[in-house]
Length: 163
Image (cartoon, rainbow, N blue to C red; front, side, top):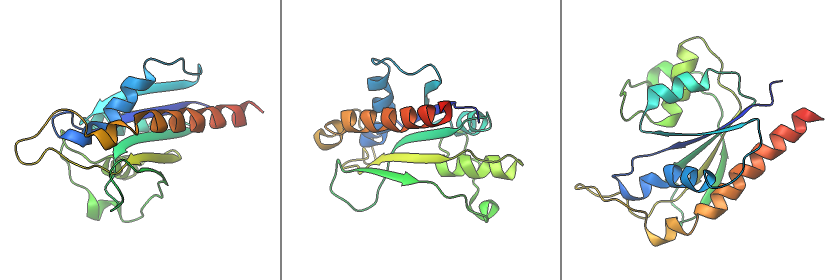
């Protein structure tokens, strides 16, 4: 067990609330992280995320806007379960690859995805056709909650491995 944790922020800053993961990462950059925790902004670089996921992480925490039909600003914690039918869902879009597709891609490349938890936030506005920068007030209000959750999950993993 490596004890290493990756906190990965994803999203497009030009599409309103889609920037949730990037903004949570910005908040985390102002905090002291445990030594075994790496926090990285992947933006819309799905291939970079896929290659990073192939490293020996004990846990990956993905931060992303997540539409699940809830109230805007609702924070979700979702354990990712690998899908055996990855090739049917694969789409190679280097600048718009969804994080789950990045996980599928590493499986298709013969690697095993690490334990992955998504901390998602219900978006209110994804920028529409013309795009928009900045989070809606409801999503902006969830940044600290999501950052605290990410740190808690990372710390629990690091401490469990240390025991």
